[in-house]
Structures are given as structure tokens and as C-alpha cells.
Image 1 (cartoon, rainbow, N blue to C red):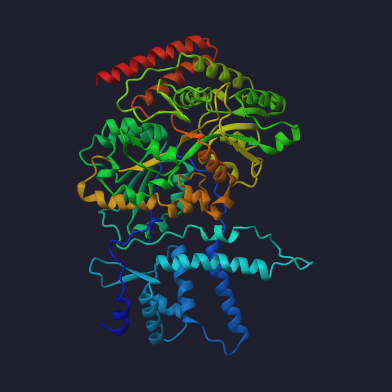
Image 2: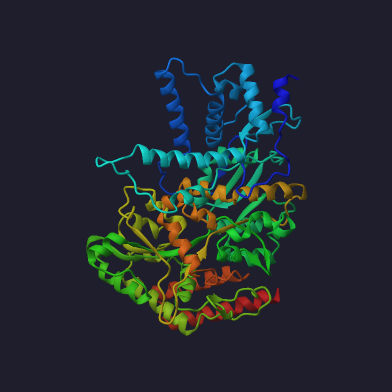
Amino acid sequence: MTKGKQQFEARRVPAESNSAIGRAGAGTMLSINRGGDEARRPPDPQFEKTELLDVVAFLEDFEHELSDALSVFAPDPYVRMTLHLIRSHLEAKTVTPTSLIGASGVPYATATRRIGEMIENGLIDQRPRTRSGKTFSMHPSEKLLESWMQLSGRLQRLAETRLMRSADGSAGQEYYFGGSYMAAQSIPPLQVLAEPLRLAGGVRVLVHGDPTFMVMDNLKRRFEQVVGTEIHQRAFSIDRLHQEALKNAERKTSRYDIIAVDLPWIGEFAEKNVLMPLDEAMDIARLDPADFHTAGWKAAHWGGRPYGVPAQTTPELLFYRKDIFAEAGMEVPATTADVIKAAKALHDPARGFYGIAWNAARGTALGHTFLMTMADFGQPVIDIPPEAGGFNTDGLKQDVYRPMIDSEAGMAAAEYLMELLKYSPPYILSMSWYERIRPYAAGEVAMAYGYTLLAPYFELDPASPAHGQTGFLPHPAGPEATPVAPVGGYVMGIPRNIAPERIEAAAEALIVFTSAGAQKLYVENGSRTNPRYSVGADPEVRRASPIFEAVDQMSWRDELQFWPRPPIPEIGEIFQICGEELHDMLRGIIPPKTALQNAQKRAERALREQRKT
């Protein structure tokens, strides 16, 4: 063994090394089976380089300029190797000792000594590439990544202070108190796992075909570098995802290591043994539970135990066109009456422009809308007890509950939907998840109820009339109720029937995929969902979209709530029942009172039958 090799092997990443921000490792291809044409993606955004890569490029160019200007200039191997490590890490390229020596710009022996010094100083981590450990890849350590984050912020502020000056000599950008502190709080990039995951066939993941999970298609090399093995992902529409998860639970051994679960399914999947309680698979403290939005974290629990980790916390909000409201001299809607008033005033079907878009398609889509609209009038769909800031969901597993569909709040919600119908597009009764956002993004409606995960359809499309002109509100409330932003989104959990030898690696992958570093990466690549406070506070994330600050404020005001769709085992059937009966009401086949009575009876029967089983 050469002296250089001995130096390289002096510091290996310890196997127990763990970071709350996640980790990064070797790049093969992530395969996507979208499971049918229902899985859709937003317009492909043109992503800019991250600020870290901008700083790398600046220093590389600066060094080249110095070498051209000064004939006596000598390259600094530490700087050159650091730049190579950082760039390769961000671009998910494997760095070997040979390639790092080549990037140093100095003789082999000198480069070998400098690499050894960087390893000894904790700046470079090495990860075995084979089981024998005879070959390994080189990665920037967490210490180096954090130092680079701080350096990047300082360089940008120095450039703004020293170089970006206007004609009168003043700084080109205003300095704000606390700005440097906030920049220092940026979440570092993902760090590689100490050891690559040993999973036969790679990590197998079942997800929903929405924009956030589809971002992984753009990040395939990055996440495979994180975990050090292949990732195979299947994506389905919401109904097919539900069916596949239940079908998978019937298999002797799970086909998947991780599955995405819509929040309302938690109770059903826990009771039917679809999911494993996470405290059986990992130390929950490693997830940093306090960092998750409270509503999103609580929604992942059943009977006091967590069954998934929030991967998306995406409340349904009211999107509205700020420019159109300003031109009309209208106030932002604060109540359901205000929404009707605004929709009526802005509705102009003669020129193909409509007041509002929402989920009104028969079945699950309209069922979701009705339950959330009942919440706007202060009533959950079942009789759970009220508490400060909402309703108490802690006893859902033990309680015997009664549907509250045929109630005053149910009637108010039905009448509200009947009013909305008047100022909606003519195809509203077939409009569901994506269809309600498309006309909003196309500039055909003034307002739309929609999840934040669908915001990329207009936020990442500069041609959209709604681009940069959208305001975000919690659901305006009915009389004597308070605004609510019903929490939606997905958690990622481990199947109950996973092969025992795969549990530990699946838990490690789950920690990576839901870490703060991963969540920030999703945002940087177009996602508009975020389950963590730390990510919402990240300056770069805040600059990406006003959604994150708006949602954080709603969370602090206790407006983010999951009780509008309580995750009881029967909730899926209740969605379907309400979506069928209310659809007949909207079509004019039955009056509101009959629709509510029918839905109430059917829901009561569903609850009774569930208890018998």
C-alpha cells in the first residue's frame, strides 16, 4: 500500500455518523413507472443554478483570470480540490482519489499530501464503493459543506457591498438588519451516507404521481448518490395508489420498501396493517419531530403512534389574482360571503372568464370539497369534541363517532357550493384536482381552491397570467367560524409486511427522503410543498415562492388543521358517498336537504358495518 493510500484511509466516515439534514452517494438511474397516464407533471421549469454552484463557478473563473493576468501565479491545490468536490457533489458526480488529484493542478505527490491533510482536518469523507473497501469515493464532509455555505453568503455580501454600487456611490442593494444571520441559517446540501445502503435490487418506492414526487425524476442521480444504491419508483393516481397499497398489504412480502400515503388514509392503513408503526423501525428522535408543522406531524399518527413521516404538507388554499382584484378595486375575500361576492363581480362568461374553480367532479373529488367546506362553517364531518384552536383528534382510534353531514353546517356548506356553481366554468361538474388549476393558470378564472403542490402550474410558467400575480389565503370562513387551511399531502411509511432484513435500510432511506436537506432540494427544483419549519425559514426557500412564508404564518396562527378530513378508517367511503350525493344535488336531480339526508344515512350505515368487522 502506498503512503498516499494510507493517508487517504486515515479517516473513514464512522458508521454511526448521522446528520439531521440527510445525506448524499453513487449515481445510477432512478426508474419511474408512472402507472398510467393519470400521473401528470407541471410544465417543465427552467431551473437556474443554485447559489452554491454560482459561487463555485465564480471562484473557478476568478482563478483562471488571475492565472492569465499573472505569469507567476501558482494554483492553490486546496482551493481547486475543494471546488471540484463541491461541484461534483452538487451535480451528483462521483469523485475518486485519481480525479481529485487531477483537479488539484499540482504534482501527484504534492496533491496526495494535500488530500491527506484535508482528510485529517475533517474536510473530506470517504465512502467504500465495494464490499471489500479497497476502492472508495471522495465527498465533502458536513464540516466542509457548512463552511462553504457560510463562505458563499459572505462572498455574495462582499460583492454586493464592494462592487454593486450605483452612480451616487451607494450600495446596490439595501442591507437589512439580521440579513447576514438569516443567510447563515441556510440548510446545507445533502451529505452522503457513511455507508451505502445494502438492499437487493435497490430501494423500491410507491408514490403519488404529483409534481412534488415527480421532482425526484429530475433528481434521480442526486438521491442515488445520497443512499448509494438504485432507487425504483412507481407513481400512480390517487385512487390507484390507494388500491395498490391495499393490494400490496395482502402479499406475503411487500413489493415496496417505502410507500406514500395520503393523510386521510392513516387510520385505515394502520387498522388494516398496511403500515408499520415507525417506532418499531427507527428511533423517532432522528426525524426531529419538532421541526415538522404541528398539523402535518399529528396527522401522521394513529392511536398515539406515528405511522409515517410527512413528505408533503400541502394545505388547500384559496388562490386569487391580485392584479385582477386590484384593477376591480376589490378587497381580498375574508368570508365565504366575500368569496361569492367577488366571484359574482368578476364572472364574465361572455368573454370566457369565470369567477372561481374548485373540485366538483363526482365521487372522491367533490367529497373532499364538501368536507373542507363544512370545516369552513366550523364543523368536522364527524362529531369529534371541540378544543382550543379546532377539534380534538387524539381519540379517533377509540371513539365511536357519528356523521354530522345532515346538520346546520352541512346545509350551509351545500348552499355555498350551489352558489359557487353559478360563477364557475361550464365544465365545473367534471373538474377535479388538476383540472381546477389549469384554467386558473391559463388566466380563465379569478380564483381557485387548490393545494399548494399544484402551484408550480403557474409559479414556474412565466407565460401564465397568474405567474407572480397570485395571492394565497386560508379558506375564508362562514359566519361565527374561523379561517382554516385544511392540511393535505402525503407521508412516507414502511409497509408492515416488508422483509425483516430490509427494515433498517428502508428506515435510513426514509430519513434521507424526508430530511430538511431533501425538502429544500425539492423546493429548489420546483416543489411548492414543505412539511418542516426549518425549510420554510431558509432564505433561499423564501425567495423561491411567497407560498412558504404564507403557510408558515398560517401554521403559527393555528389555521393549518387536519380535522376537516379526520383520518378514520371509513373516511374514503365517506368521501365517495358525499361526492355522489352532492353531485346529484349540483346537477339539480335532488334538493340539498335530500342530498344531505341520503349522505347521512349511507355514512351511518358505513360506520356501523365497519364496526362489525
